[in-house]
Image (cartoon, rainbow, N blue to C red; front, side):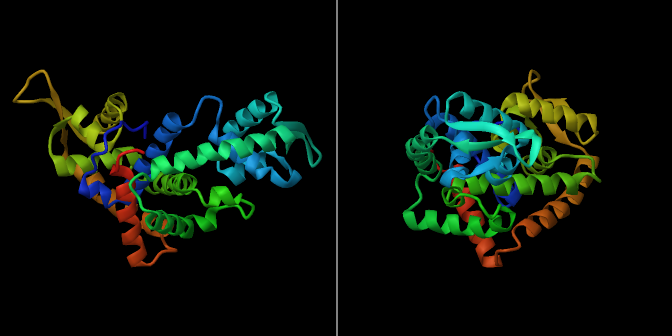
Length: 294
């Protein structure tokens, strides 16, 4: 999905869906990055510097795996860190076609300085949580994410609610994309169909607010759903200038099939938790999504 708006409305029906909750939580983390981190501080660069502690020399590919970013992002991060003198890039002795990185003393100092900003980010994301609630949420997220994390993931990342949310969201999204392929829709389409089923015919802007996405992104989603014959735009009888989205019979059928697939995908990801723990995680994630920023 596209970047969420600042609205924190959450339909109860969507709030019961782990996939939607983790997407909204990931959007919250992304928004906090823009709001909290000062110019010149990059959270991915910070993570990379952490992963290079202790004088390690590591390939860009292994770093990308450890800090959970794409290869493209890692290439940019490595280039920026090298330009600032925070890492040295050398040809990887195991593969001369790639680079290996090592942290400089200046990089170690930067990691120490940036840790405070990373902690500010955590405080912003979990504003309104007590210390006990933060620890409870962190422990539940860790249980879910643990099997998918590299063994050498730095401790500050393993302890970061924002990092764990991002890692679980990425895995859940990939599973759901694959699960929905037989239906021919994406997770954003599923969320919009589920919201329309609850709300009834509404304008694109109203649907965007409940989905937590921008209006332009909602237009794109609506275009794609209409092209698939799952929804239809109709003039509002109350205001002919406004178009409302109507769920069509094929949209209902696609939604019914997608619900089961979504539940299977979520169950697989949350398998490390008991039923009670899963319910508690959803409650805490709902609060994470809807609580005011710090």
